[in-house]
Image (cartoon, rainbow, N blue to C red):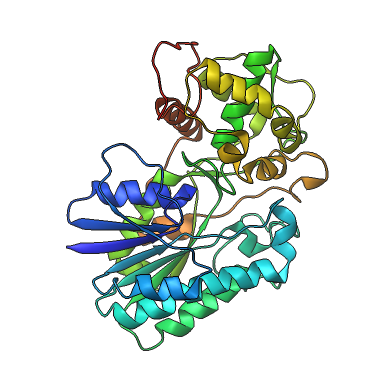
Length: 372
């Protein structure tokens, strides 16, 4: 029996990892996070509530992890407003301390540990500070900018020296999944924007101010890659980019998104979702009431993701500094070749939040009570 610990289990990637590993035969799943992850009904896993900033709490929890064989470290600390914190040392040092608080005592007791997956992202290539070399490749020298990714990677590499366990570092592109109230997931942001447009009779305008070419990645796909890397010799000690396998421009995928939320696509004025959604929080409350949705406030729904939306939709001064494309050849050559159609992905996740009673049904079917 394999036992995997998903650290950051309530996040957009962590929740998908909990669901996927729990679906595999021969795996016991433990999710670690401050709040219990919102996962599919029937998902069997243990939950350990721990604040990774609490060093003593981490030591106490780690004492019970002696039987672990695998770890997926998907925890993340972001500051209010999101992007400004990416350049600040306290954000970087906090993320390092969180990893160290848990992993140092865990590594001391988990004598059967075989593999650790660690999350990075395209900020590793400096996507937030300068245009990327297209495509960004894993074999390039480390981009010379301060980032907690480097601090965590150096920590893991240092701890692994001379040990039997190994690790894989992941660099996903723009991530999409079902989790709400997180730092970076546009699905609940788009869903809330659509619901408010419908409620107020506004056109469902594509928020993008500039047409940038980007790549998306489905959290289910990332979770499958974690499971592959857990046992694959070709993943040991490697760094991999991961994407769905296609590219997208917001204007071109907007009709699919509009269809998924039951609206007509529109292309008028660009929209700052970091401004629009808080300004219409009371309208959202009305949507929740009228559609018998789960009692999730606007703040609880979007977390910091509405700020992330402005970046990814290239709105105003928060726009990306150029195309954000990475090569995934290395991952495919290593043996993981799964992919996901990005338009199908949008339909899936928007539908999943409808099924969970977080977003209203596109057909205004309010007869079923979704409250929990």
